[in-house]
Amino acid sequence: MKRLFILLLATALACSGPAPKTQDPLPMSSEKKNDPHSFAQTEIAQVVHLDWDALIDFEQKVIDATATWTLSEGSSGEVIFDTYDLDIIDVTDGNGKPRTYTVGEKNALFGSPLIIQLAEGDKKVAISYRTSPDAKALQWTDTEQTADKLGPFLYTQSQAILARTWVPCQDGPGIRFTYDATVQVPPGMLALMSASNPSEVSNDGAYTYSMPQPIPSYLLALSAGHLAFKEVGARTGVYAEPSMVDTCAWEFADMEAMMVAAEELYGPYEWGRYDLIVLPPSFPFGGMENPRLTFATPTILAGDRSLVALVAHELAHSWSGNLVTNSVWDDFWLNEGFTVYFEMRIMEAVYGREYSEMLALLSHTELLNTVEEFMESMPDDTRLKLDLKGRNPDDGVTAIPYDKGYHFLRLMEETIGRERFDAFLKNYFQANRFKVMDTERFVALLKTDLLTEEEYSSIGVDNWIYAPGLPANVPVPNSDRFEKVDGYALAFLNETKLPENEVTETWSTHEWLRFLRRIKGADVNALAQLDAAYSLTRSGNAELAAQWFENTLSEKEAYRAPNDMDLEASVTDFLTRVGRRKFLMPIYSALLEGDKLEWAQSIYEKARPGYHAVSRESLDELLLASD
Ligand code: BES
Ligand code: ZN
Image (cartoon, rainbow, N blue to C red; front, side, top):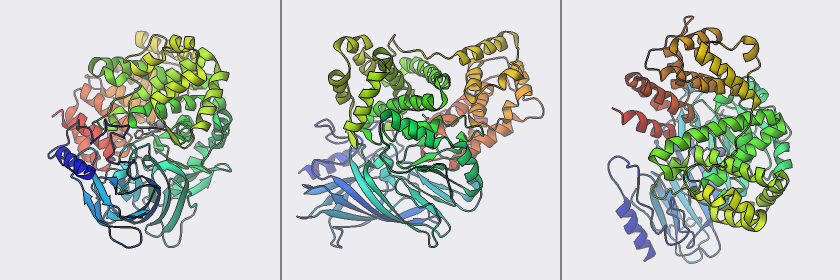
């Protein structure tokens, strides 16, 4: 009966033609607290362990695999998995006995349910399948797009609901499982997962892994290519292409200090090793907190360690997110807001308050801009607790969960003092380790374990979490260093006075960013003088280059770079090399704002095949819709 109901609904939901932006909610999501982005019906049957056996085929750009899932006690009747364009080859009980299954019709956002009939006593199901060459989580990077050109490269990006495009799984953050895996790649390649990892290339391209701590599916990760490893500390190290690995180890030398600081704040690191892999530049995010192995963009290699806050951020997720996990994507701020708060605390502990306050102020400005922008067209998306039912959870990835979440936690800290707040958080991570958390339970905890009634209402907890906009008691970070920068920005805007070399020599990337953001809209001739002095058009620092491109390209008047620098060439090179969405969106938007649609589209046409699906989806919306 239930199965029929799901099938009927799945059929009703199936859509044809281009993917609409909003989909109807998945079946039965309102009846109980089920994940609205997953077909799984965990009260009938739930997974507890995965054995994954895979062959990575770089020629056809597919993975041939068997996923053998162990089911929890009491699972019976049928078990439902999420899949997206997986070619299911056969399903057995794990001992070779076939089991009947159905693949429901495809929903453009959520894919298809795979419904397997269990026989009495079945404890496992084994699913053999092949991924689609277009699987959204998989980025097959051509040799040309790698640094050393030793061969192609593969990496996955599962968060939020893309794990189902490479592993049939119960794809919601509330479902945890342990895993073991064997992976076969072409000999010469190193393959890594979000698990115990090899540090050396094997002779035959075969590798085994184990992840004994239970994780949700969005933390399943795989990466394979010509990689080398270099130790950073006793528990830390970096993987990167051979020519980059020394540079990377230098840039991230403080990983160990960050771990020590983090553990001191909120308790033991529970995952064994903490390594980081620097991926090819097409990686669509800055970083991804895959357990034991953070995935990172090479655009944080500034050469001066100035962009390592990203490492602190992904490391912090080892507690907020990976250990205590948002129950569904509506509670995403519990992952990211806590992580930004924790990131700032790690940065403060390792580099000092003056430094972390610059980061906090950048977050503050971002927050004000986002709230202002969203209040016009989508005020509901400025709430901490989101409503993403029927929508792509990716729509919730904005400055709100990150920066509003951060400021809310900071307000609590400032209201009740660090000592009480830290004790609460330490206990929170300990008491909820390897569990899920939702917004309502968190609010209940605040009431029972942390805040007096007076504190609760003076903070305005409900308002912060459930109301749109930004409460008036938002904390304002204080940075003397930025105040000085603001003075130089004003002098530049008003009198075209350039900041002197002696001054800018002391500036970090953050001060430069603050300065460039403050002088947005400056006259193009003034910008050219700044460029002549500091060669911003040719900056090797991706953050600065991206900000500079944004500033200059958004001008309707054509910007001419001085000293034979070629803005067009720099922008084209950047956009065809780098796939990080955080940079691509503002730069392409600036091109549109500056009436350069044709230019934007011609670069995009060339660059698009090299971008990850996550970036392509956002850019298609921006650029192909403006025709
Ligand atoms: N977990 C996120 C990345 C993510 C979020 C991927 C949602 C897919 C869906 C990661 O921890 C993150 O926040 N990355 C930021 C880093 C930054 C805030 C330091 C990024 O990629 O820019
Ligand atoms: Zn994060």
